[in-house]
Amino acid sequence: MFGLAGAFRYYFCHEKVSMRYRHNGLGCFVKNELHRDPLNGDAYIFMSKDQKTLRVFYYYNKKLILTDAKCLSGVFPRPSFDTASRLFEVTRDDFVRMVEDIIPVKKVFEVCSQSVTF
Image (cartoon, rainbow, N blue to C red; front, side, top):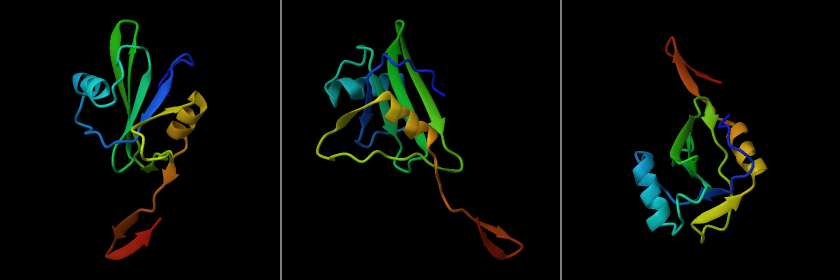
């Protein structure tokens, strides 16, 4: 889906990060808050508080790249780690599983004054 190579090292940021941040904001966050070099070729994964948006930030071929995935019918699974740490290394398989395994969410729709649950 994202087209990331297996040569990347993937890091999941457990901290809450504003999804309004773009290239410069996430680059500064990685450098100042996580104490990592955003230009070292690692991929950093950020998830919104409601788990519906997944953002991947990485440096490749002299370009800063920011990709988004928005889940419309469920939520992305949040990995469970020791919350004392701010950043976790995940394998490529775990990253792919995180992106592809969508957790369905029950939605309630109102149809003709009746509540219908799917």
